[in-house]
Amino acid sequence: MIKKIALAGALAATASFATWDKFPVLDAGKGQAKVGFKYQMPEDKWSAADLYVGARYAVIQNLELGVVLDYRLFTHYDGEDAKRDGLDNLPIMVRYQFMPTMNAFLDVTLPIGADEVVGEDGEIGFHAGVQFSQNFGMISLGTEAGLALETAGDDKTTPPWKLNIGAEADFALGGPVTPYVGLDLIMELGKYTYDGDNVGEGHTGDLGIFPYVGVGYSINQMISLDASVSLGLGNEHLVDDDMDLTIDVNAKFNF
Image (cartoon, rainbow, N blue to C red; front, side, top):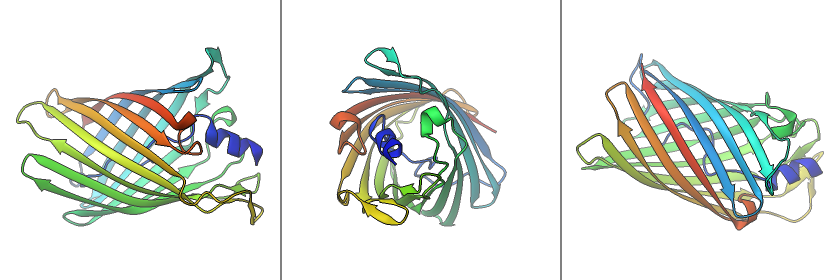
């Protein structure tokens, strides 16, 4: 239990859960792959870098499946190697567009990650919710509300549930460049539990605030590039030392 709580505090959670984005699913038979690099620079002495690859595919009209594989390249504390590198847990993503402007989603995170990165508990994560998106002229707005929870795992410990609400606005400028801004909020609900019993103080209302800004560049209809910077503010259970900065760059390939 102590290890799970410690890992939650050190390089805790970034803003996003596994959901691919906040906009409509792809057309049937269409897919997209991406490869990216992420570097997290907290205000305290922790830092980490990840390499990730992912893919999504619309198997039928309105139904999209996706997966992202993340590998922790290194984790440093005060400039020294903290020996926390390896494969992260694996999110499997399902989105169903039940209205032209609304999606329902379910993400299931499987415990395949290295013990040094995710701990030895073997918990399974679930994240479900709805998304709403709408175009307003040159602005595409995407929003999301969801609830995330984990099973107890081998150590019989479960963290508080997490409620997330987010919005993103993409600005179509008429060329290959698409800037965007967004904001994600994550709030904890409840307490840590051990073997079904509450442990310690309640965390309901503990809040993480994650504003971000980025830009996409379309090379052609098949390939695009993306770069973003996000800032984490809030409670130490959700953000490292009250503030952290994450840089993310990736390339997307349509097929």
